[in-house]
Image 1 (cartoon, rainbow over the protein chains, first blue to last red):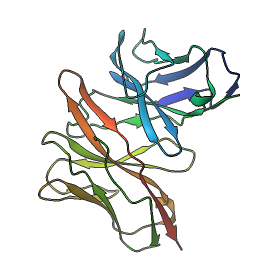
Image 2: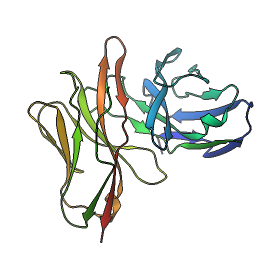
Image 3: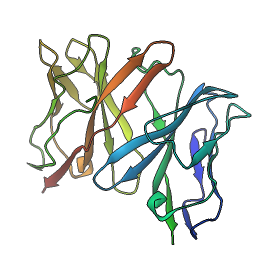
Image 4: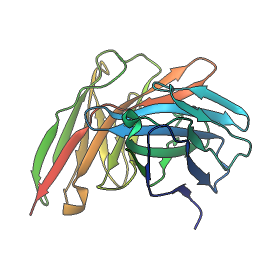
Length: 117
Length: 113
């Protein structure tokens, strides 16, 4: 089925290691987003992308790198993982970034639970 | 602050209506109000959104105050499957960047049989 998929579902890594979380969508949506979810903070926007090769920072971008060479993929890389990056990460997509528009909404993946030891 | 204010938790009985309040006193004229919900171990799911008028869809109704400083999500007949965290969100319109959803803490709704 078409949709937005994240991999891996669970990941355990060690401090200092590089980790890449994958996000793939089959709708050809222009916009893609990465959020992290932590107790006490709700969901916070890390990075977003308006189209291939166009990315921008969200609320909490430090320590993360993104790329978007193809419309359907939006990987998130932790270049040197820290314990504070232990979190659940959600990828989302929308037809456009103008979510103020009628019938516009975000579609979320099922999340990646990342533990940094 | 762009985030909304919601009660941390609410309880409801099955088959009864539920009114989930949200305060967004600093909202600007172009910001839509969105509601998403998150079931356990899943990503957030769109529920409804609106700007000024009340809105209805198959999942819920959204009542927006005349001054737009608050809104209420209405589940007409709660079921056990409606137990989730409900997020009230301002969709910020940023010039030349489109819109962003800024999530708050949400309200955890529990439904009793």
